[in-house]
Image (cartoon, rainbow over all chains, first blue to last red; front, side, top):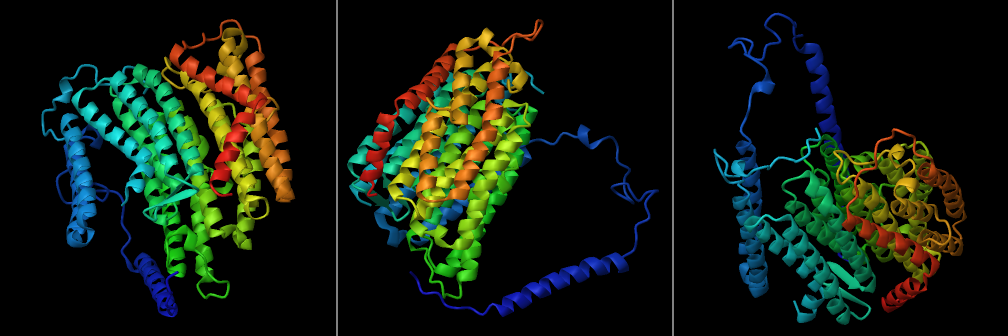
Amino acid sequence: MATVIPVDMWPFLIFCVVVFGLLGVMLVASWYIGSKARHGGAQDIPYESGIVPVGEAEDMRLSIEFYLVAIFFVIFDLETIFIVAWAVAFEETAWLGYGAAAVFIGMLLIALLYEYRTGALDWGIKRRVYEPGRYAKVDSA
Amino acid sequence: MTLTDLWVSFPLIVLVGGTLVLMIGVSIVRTHKLALGLTLLTLILSVAAHDIALENITTGYELFGLLNVSGIQVFFNVLFLLGAIVTALFAYPYFNERMERCEEFYILLLTATAGAMVVAAATHFASFILGLEILSISLYAMIAYPRESHQPLEAAAKYLVLSAVASSAILMGVALVYAASGTMAFAELNISPESGERSYFLLGQALICVGIAFKLSLVPFHMWTPDVYQGAPAVVTGYVATVSKGAVIALLINYVQATEVLSYTGVFYAVVFVAVASMIVGNLLALLQTNLKRLLAYSSIAHLGYLLIAVLVVNTARPELVLETVLLYVAAYFIITLAAFGIVNLTSEHATEDNEQMEAYTGLFWRNPLLASVLTAVALALAGIPLTVGFIAKFYVFAAGVEGTAWALVWALLIGSAIGVFYYLRLIYTMVKQVEPGAAALPQVGTQSVVAVTVLGLLIVVLGVYPTPMIDMIRTIVQASGF
């Protein structure tokens, strides 16, 4: 069992008290000092001094690709972190580390192949749109 | 890493390799049959690979300081793999009727099973949390798999949020325990009673217990269970109820034996409270249900409460009896639960929604005697009536409770079982009732799942009448593991 160095807890407690105190002051003070919104008129329109919005938000169609790109960025970014961590310890981990990293990168390649083939990487016109009957057979909505 | 390391981890390697092959297969040709075939092949090969693993184990084998593989882990792993095989067989007709893209389900099934195997063998917090997350994240996607329907999405969202809360409780607990003891290996997690770090060591243990109780849906943390069980497709519900809970039970018994956490009175009485509450509240709430999936959810809460008795007497009863009870109970629970959700699943194959209302089973005896017989066996086994495997399991728990002199727990078990008999018998009563004229016709039933369900139903009865081979096998496993 590793030896544990005792640490004074009181600075942490003071820190907690200060954090909560500050938050409390902010919340309470802004309630009393801040100006009260007068609802009605142009107050409730999204862009108070701008263009008057047209239509409903539900009619707007945002392409799903933005979401996919964000997800892929996060995934590949995380994978880079693992690979960099291995590269730093390249000498120490030797062949075992090399093998493990090779397996990891191989799995990534397979995942990439899968993503490519399912059409997740297509931008704009989708190949998979032309697959007949890709929606659920039974409409259970 | 030695060659023995490789052989002992061979089942996991086979499983992960099979998952990758399946992924390549899905990206090249999308055929539902091929995906099912590859999945079954992978699972069966992984079961077979346990034979090789066993040859390299004497009492237990420490893998990389993260996993400990002994006969007990092999038993759990084979149960998970068999559970996954049954799930895959049930899933094929269910998804084939509903969805166009069914292949990813099997990838998720394989990764979830790999996660369960890691959790069951974990002896270190790192492997525990890693395995738990592999399991949980696969489960979120499996629950939401029929993504065009409303209910599975709702269930998955609930499970995602609540399960993440439980995981963060475990992580916070691990951080506190690590701060106090300076180690993350289960076997070294001990701290002297005089130590100044004891207060937050116990707080950490409490948080870990909360997380585990959530994953096992024990009473103060059971709120998610009925909703998730109801919303998820019946195949996935069966899998969540068996494999994911079995993995956490395997971990719990490991953890309790390695860390002796139950020797702290505070933790012990908290777990006693949780067990008693699960047995009583689970059974009482099950009385009110008219939905079969919700009824089974509450019943599973109660059953995990019964199982907790065996874990609680770990310090007072013989360790081999405790382990035998846990293994036997988990095996019995797997068979019964998979059969129960299998029936719900196979009567829903051609329907738009799962056939989950109790009314839908009215007069099942007169309309489909075979299914009704299996469901009767399930109900009797869940109630713990003799001549079913449920009785043997409950009797073992009872014996363990008596040997551990945990009288309050034994009383709760008796009271809970007495309440339970009422709603299990009501299910049978519903099936015996005459069909009202003009009632909706029974949904069509596929043959492949009927065979699987019948085999499970036969196992319930056969192992109940002649349990000796199973008991002997479990006894040998426990003794070979050094107890």
